[in-house]
Length: 334
Image 1 (spheres, helix red, strand yellow):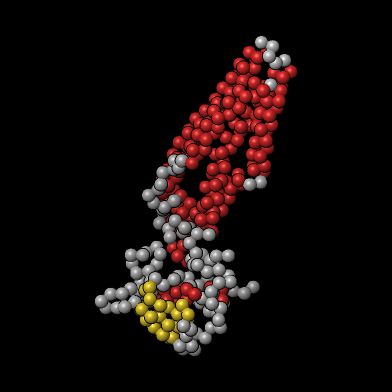
Image 2: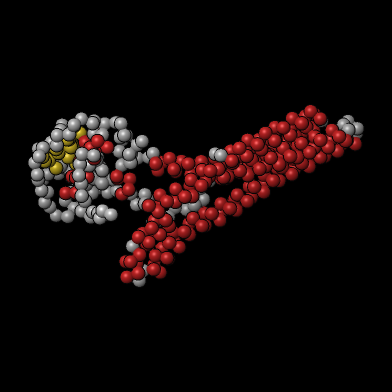
């Protein structure tokens, strides 16, 4: 299993609210690709093939007319698929609605203390406007295309009835063959229309599945449970002209090369204790985060016992390191 890089959580779009939205709405949409919906699509496709086959068996003239109408129905279905792929939701300039809700609920005491309930509500409403407007347009487009697909089906019915009635009047076929073939075509065409209507939910399921896999198997730290060096750790740490900048702030490096400095360099031997002293933002915690492999250095070298931290097994490394952050959350034993 791949381990996600800590930098993923620094990006403003990757919040708890966005993650819960993916785990809720997107996973529900993926249900349209597997399970009962998949079996339903197979059943409908079988009914279409069976209907045309029965029509050809009882009255081949009506069966051929039905086959000639299939491309018309197929074009309507493909048009519905193309329209369902269009993204009609306008992008937001600021934070997304789930992120605003998450921040407001997380800091509810500060929101109440500074009387910001109305502002948070207005921000949330403003963030919902592009999505709601896009949903309205999507609904109008989907309704029009669905109406066209139904039009294609009923036009096909009319053509089949017209040809069948002419054959029946001219005694080219008997009433039993006419009735059986027409009913078979009708049920098959209704099945085809239901398949095209289901394309919309299927497309949403594909998009949601892509988001889910992109979230859980997207940018990672490049390691897995079994990969990397698992040699016994002695504890010799060395930073040699190490450079680093956070993924969310690539233009504001913490450790960098300049006329006055050449990255950060330090050496800590095993069983040696040191103290890192500096102003806030100078990179004290960043050094520890590189050691823990929360982040990867962007230049220079950072090694443990002569091995780059990026080449170490994450589980093995962190199982040998004790770390208490600046703002620890400790629970008393029960």
